[in-house]
Length: 294
Image (cartoon, rainbow, N blue to C red; front, side, top):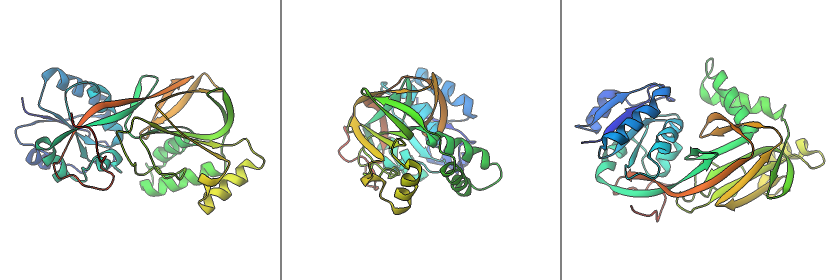
């Protein structure tokens, strides 16, 4: 059967009207679903064995679909219809027009991150990061997303909460732990674009809170853009890592969505677990050069 297009109209800005999707994906079934119905819709698509599954929504919607399509022969076409569309952009799909050309393009193998059975396509964060996400989502009901993000960051800069995380036998007081799927830039907060999505590594970053005047030193490093040179930051690249947090359950932000998981948190890279379809001429910045063809 032709492809299936799953649309989450509640995802971010979702600038993908059904008429435009129908024109972009002729002969394909188009299903508009709410947040909670994305998973069963994609599961049904797997059973129906279409040529591909296109998913229109933000990174959270794509994360849900990726978890179901992982380790199958069914390819995902990311349709950038959310707010930031990090994943779609980084595989070379910048627009609906790019997505429309993907089914006749190439199959590419992409890594997935996983923590305690939950996948993520971009990154996972604990500590101040999920607090900012939660506060931002609450503020979005009364202000634009950009302003909501700024307000959340400002509020949490004044009220950081430390926690203890143990990694490979060493314990840290920390403000934040970030785990990226693939290699990001070398700055602690340079997490907008990756160098690769098929390198088989997780990019682990810990913002420490266990040094003298830790709060002031962290804020000063942020203001001067020198966190990566500061002893307050720890970087690591691994294929698998276990983090133990000083509480039985912890909120983890997975691609911008908060999920509560039990400690310890076991992160691993699922190398080449997801197949995506991309246009033949994808050359957008951030596209995973050298990705393995399925």
